[in-house]
Image 1 (cartoon, helix red, strand yellow):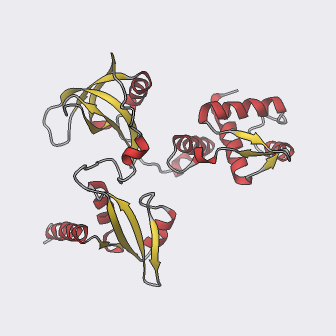
Image 2 (cartoon, rainbow, N blue to C red):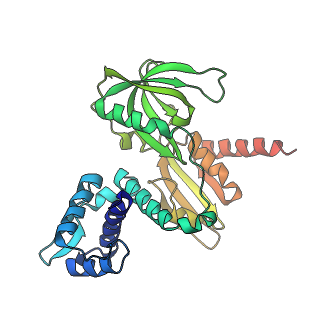
Image 3 (cartoon, rainbow, N blue to C red):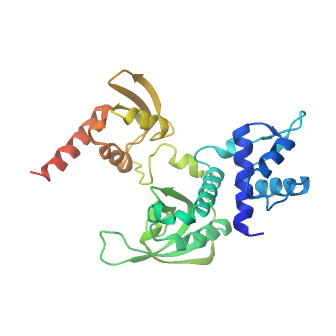
Length: 300
C-alpha cells in the first residue's frame, strides 16, 4: 500500500472519531466501506488496531474504548489548536485533500512556501540529540553574512515562515530568534549542550504575538475595538490565546488581550487599517497613531 494512502487512513480515522465524539466499531466499518480508502476490502479488527496503534505512535493521539464499546479520543488536549499533533494532523489532512484534487490542480491557488525548509531536518535532529549548530546567517539589512554557533531550543512557525530560537554565541549565550530563510548554511556539530531545565517553548512565547520578542516590553492589558467585519473575523480566528470579547453592540466589539505589544503585534493592528482601533493602553494607542501618521506622509 502506498504511504500516502496509509496516512490518509490515519487522518480519516482520527477525524471520523473526532466528528462523532463517540462511535462503535460497526459504525466505523460502515463509514470505511463508504470511503475510497478501503481498497475494496472491509475493515478488519486487525487493521483497525494497527491504524489505532500507529496513530498513537505518530501523533500521540490515544483512541480508547469505553464500557459501552464506544471508541473516543481519550486525550483531546493533544489536539489543542497550537499543538504539534494538531498541526501535523491538519497538514496531512490538507495534503490528502490536495492529492485528491490533482485533476483540478490549475484551479487550486496556493501560497509560496519561503526558502529554508531544507534546514528543518538538520535543526530537528540537533534538538533531539542536543547538538550545537554552526550557522551562516545574513540579515536583510546586512551586506555580508556572519557565522555563529547556536544551541537550538525550539522551532516556531509564523506566517508560513519557520524560525529557530536558540542560544547564540554571537549574543553571548542569550536567546535569539533566526529565520530559516536567512540562513546561508547550517551544519550540525558533535558538540553537546544542555537545555535549560526551566525552559518551556510554549511558556516562553505565551505572552507574545509572533516571533520577535522584546524583554523590555512588559505584558499588559490591551483592548482593541473592532469595526465592520472584523469582530466576526476575530471570533473565528483570534489574534492571541488570551483574547476575550468584553463588549459588543451594532457598531463594534471590544476584545481584551494580555500580552507584550511587540513589533509583530503592532503590525497585526496596523494591517487591519480603520477596522481595528487601540482603546487601551494609551502609550500603545499613541504609538499606533504615530505609525499611521508616518504612513500617510508617504502619500503626500
